[in-house]
Amino acid sequence: MAATCRHPATLHLPPELWCKIFKDSDKDTLLGISSTCRYLHGIAQRFIFRDFHFYPGHDIGFSSDLPRLDFYASDAIAPHVRELSVSIDRDIPRTDSTELLTSFFNALPRFLNTRSLTLRAIYMTALFSQRVSTLAFLEDLHVVECSPPLHTELFPILRLHTFTCLYYTGQSAHRLGTHHWLALLDPDYLQVLEIPLNVSTCSFFLASDNNSLHPFPSLHTVNFKCYYDH
Image 1 (cartoon, one colour):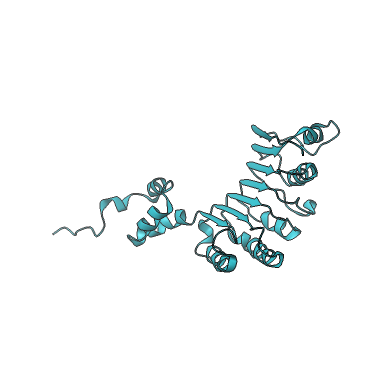
Image 2: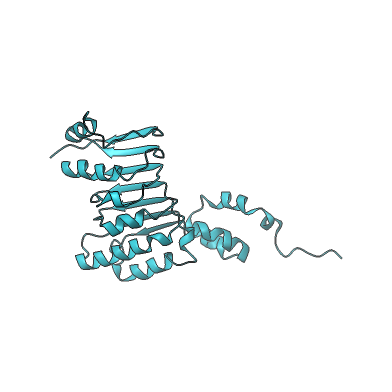
C-alpha cells in the first residue's frame, strides 16, 4: 500500500514560489497563513515582519514602545526586517524622546538586512549617524526635516541607490542639511536623488565654485522639490 502524503501537494512548491505569492499579501492574511503549519510559518514570517515603524507617542503612548522595539530587534525577528522608519511625537518630553531615540539607534545594527530607512524630524547626533552607517545592505535613505549629521568625515561612505532629503522650512536647513548628507554618499552608487530647491538653494547648489554636488556617474533620476521662502 502506498504511503499517503501528510501535506497537500501545494506545500511541496519551492520556497521561491511561495515568496512570490506572499510578497504582496497584507499582514492579516500572512498571520493566518503562518498559523496553518510550520512550513508556511517559516516562509510567511519574513513578510510579516518586513517593515518596522517606530513612532513613539503617535498612537497609544510611548510606554509600550521600548518592549515593541526589543521584540523587533530580537535575533528571531530583526533579520526579517527590510524597511525601517522612525519619528518621535513632538509632545513627548525631551528626556524621554532622547532615551527612545538612543534605544532605537543602538538597536539599528541588529537590523542587518534593512534595505530602506526613513528618518523624520530627528536631531542627528554623532552616535545616530554612526549607527546608520552600520547598515551594510541599506539601499534607500529618506531624510525628512532632520538636522545635519555631525562630523561626517568620521563615518564610512553610504552606498545608496536612492537618497531623499527634504526640508520644508528654513533656507539654511536646505543648504547645510543637504550639503552634509550628500557628503556621506558614495558617488558611484547613487541612482536616484530627491532634494529641496528654491531660489536661494538653487543658487547654492549650482554655483560654479561649489563642489558639494560632486558628480554622480550612476545618477539617472533627480527630483527637485521647490518650496516658497517665507
